[in-house]
Each structure stands twice: as C-alpha cells, then as structure tokens.
Amino acid sequence: MHNVIVLGLDGAPWKLIKPWIEEGKLPFFKKVIKNGVYGTVRSTIPPLTSPALPSLYTGLNPGKLGLFDFMKDGRVISSKDIPSPTIWDYLNKDGKKPLIFNMPITYPPGRSGGVIVSGYPIPGRKSEFTYPESIKREFDIPMDLVDIRSSDFPDYNYEYLIKNQTKITKSRFNIFRTILKREKFGFAMFFVKGTDILQHYLWNSKRFLEDYYTFLDRELAKICDGVPDWNVFIFSDHGFETAPTRNFHVNTWLQKEGYLKMKGGKIGGQIIAALISYASRIVPQKVKLRAVKNSITKGKEGKTKPRTLLPGVDWESTTAYKDRLGISINREVCQERYETVREEIIKKLLKLKDRDGKNIIQEAWKREEIYSGHYVKDVPDIVIVTDGDYSTTPIPSRHIVSGRKKRVITGAHHSALEGIFIAYGPDIKSGEKINRMSILDIAPTILHMYGIPIPRDMDGRVLKEIFKEGSSHARREVLYEDEEIDREKVLIERAIDEMIADFRGMD
View 1: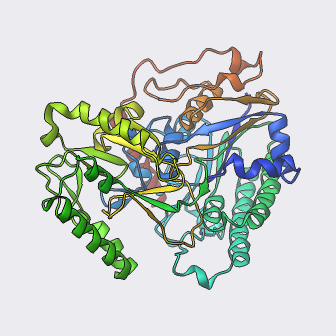
View 2: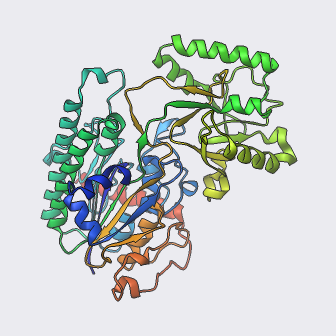
View 3: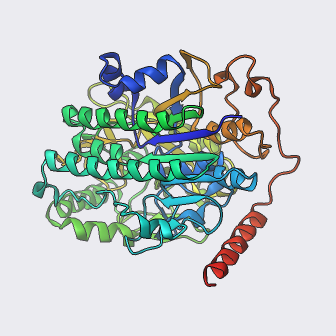
C-alpha cells in the first residue's frame, strides 16, 4: 500500500493557472496533469475556507457540521467546533501516523497522535498551536500576512507583499519537508494560505501572481520528489474571480416585490433608504462594522433577525427578508403559504436581470436541497449565490442595484464554487480528466485507499474512477461502517485522550 500526501492551495482556480501550465511556466503542474488525473472540484456553499475544509476533513456537508463561516455564536471557530472525526483521526486510530501542517481550522491542535502545526485562524504566536509543543520551540514558524487591512495597504507595495508572502511560504515548505523526512509518517497534509491572500490583493496584477505560482511549482515538486512512492492529491478549497463591482440590495428587491413591508409604506421605505445611504457615506468604517455586529440578535427560535440595519420594517406583515446566506421566510406571517412563497421567490430570483440583461443570481435553492443534518435549521430558507459581479447586502437603497466603491481588494470568491483537483502517483491513472466531484469526496476516497471502513453518514463518495485498472483500490469494494458513528462518543474519547496526554506532559 502506498501512502497519501494532500497539498492544498487556498483558492487556486484553473482559469488562472491553466494558461501558465500550457505555456510551460509551471512544469510540475504540467507533469502531474499529464501523468495523473485532474478535474474541477465543487466547493461548499458558501465557497469559503471555513466550511469547505471541515467538510473536506470529515466528508460531511456543512449542515451536519454547523459551520458556514469563520464565526459561530459570536466567536471565531476552532477545531473544537468540528463535531466529527477527521481524516487523520481515522488514520491515527488505524496506526498511520499523520503530519498535518498549516491546515486551517485545526487550532487547537489536539494532544494525541502524529504532528500537527495548526493553520489560520490562530490566536497569536504565543499560543500553543503545535503538537507536540516542542515543534514550536524547535522551529521559527511564521505567521501569514492575513492582518493586512485595506486602510493599511497604502503603506505596502506589491513587491513588498509578494516578497514577504513568498518568504513566509518558503519557510513553511522547508519546515514541513524537514519534519516529513526525519519521521516515519503514514499520511501528510500541507496547506498554502498565500494563494488566497495574494489573489485578494493582486488579482488584477497577474505578473506578481505568476511569480508566486512559479515559486510554488518548484516547492511542490521538491515535496513530491521527497516521497516518490506516495500518491499525491492537489486541491483548492474554492475558486477565485474578480471582486464584485455592484451591490444587489436584497431587501429593497423584496420590498418592491411585496415580501418586505415598511411601517411607513413605500414613502417611508424611501426615506429610510435615503438616510441610510447618506449615513453610509459619512460614518467611519469602524462604526459601520460595530453597527453590523450589534444589529444581529437572536429571535425566539434562535434565528437571526436584522434590526438596526432594517429600521422601520413592519415585521408583522413582512414575509421574507435578507439573512446571512440568503433569504429567510417569516413563517409566522406566511403560515400555510410557506412553500408557495419560497418557490415564488426562487423563480423570480433566477429570472432577475440587471439593465445589461445579465443575471444577478447565479443559483438559488431551498436550503434542504443542498444541506442535510442537524444544523439545516440554522440556514436561511432560501440559499443564493450571486453572479460574480454582484455582492448581496441587507442594507436598503433607493435602487435594487448600486455600484460599489473602488476597493484595494480586487479578487474574491463569494460565488467561485469551482476549485482544482489533481491526483498523481503509483495507484492513479494517467492523463485523464474527471468531470464530477465534490470536496466532500476527498475524505472517503482517502479512507478507501487505506482500507478503512467509511462511516455511512459521510456525504462524499469514493472516486474509484481515478485509480488504475487492476490496482487494489480499483478492485476492492468500498467498505462501510455497519453502524452510524456516535459523534458525541467520539468527542468524549477525543477529550479524554487529550486529558491523558496533558497529564503525561506534566510528568
């Protein structure tokens, strides 16, 4: 059996790197595509690292994990918010020592098995973000430049940004290779955060991005040269595209369609929209962010309702309003018309076009069409993904669509659902393209490669089409656990293991 190494590139899209591959500027990428399997991987909704990677780690959709953003219950999420075993939990239990390096949402790193160097978000350099703790003391592990703010960016220049992020990434590669080489691991994961950071700021400066990807091409080749008998997975957790230039004022549209009602009627709504529009131009950004944070309050059933951002709304007559990921339906008002209202709104959204005849909404679903599990109730009734040129906002306006001010951030991924996937190695087919896969498929595929039974509630599937004909992975039937995993029991066992390891560390 051959081990597996998984290499992640945050937000890497085919449309960016494909021309450079074809031009021969990324020889390692060209090699693994020619001699391996490649395709597009569909991310989670929303296509953000925070839900996508926990789903990759567990093979479960966000509705079973309850993770849809970097925030949960007013705080930044951590590894403790993942209510399920991860790939490396299964492998470690099976005796395959894992090396997990810079993977996001792995802080705190746990206290048992393998080596873990947590990735973003981390409280700070002084926190214990490695296991064992001696790794942090032995290596000077750098932090990413994720603290760059738009207001600070004029103090930097593109050359400075690319130079420093390259330095940080190179240091991480060196440390990862050192640890991988000196210990006997049975599985490894490494994540590059810099691709996402740089693409946010340099999307319109492809020359700098090309330099960074050329550097990554060389470093990835070094890693794979060091483990020639391993199977390699290369993936991105979502895609990337040009940052939106227009706002879609969802609540304004809902009001015009008759779903959202203002206490002062149409005139009252126009007055409030005008006041908010004026305030948005004169109020400092920090005050705006504080207002947004304070405007979200819990309803009787735990649902979030915008208050400060939507002053003057007649909640007793309103049937629908903008929520986090989409549109929530006011069941108290709709009652038996709930399904009818949802279907009406979805149909109208999909037909909605701007003045140029372009669709504003890329996709719209009923929440249960894309999520399943305990946390589906926490999602708005209608989930939407806009066209890449649009960003949604709950703030009312005099117009349904408005222009966005020019920003330092030029790249985004709020609607970029498609990332990259490449598989290469002794058990993988050569030169073939796969047409349909999800980020949820990676976990069960890896477990299958190690001969570990797959939990029946995993949402992903085993990608048997990537394996060479006649290989053990292709011939072997997919094994499933006889019973669904008791996740509460797993979390208790994990906590006990960590307590035991802590006590041992006190000796």
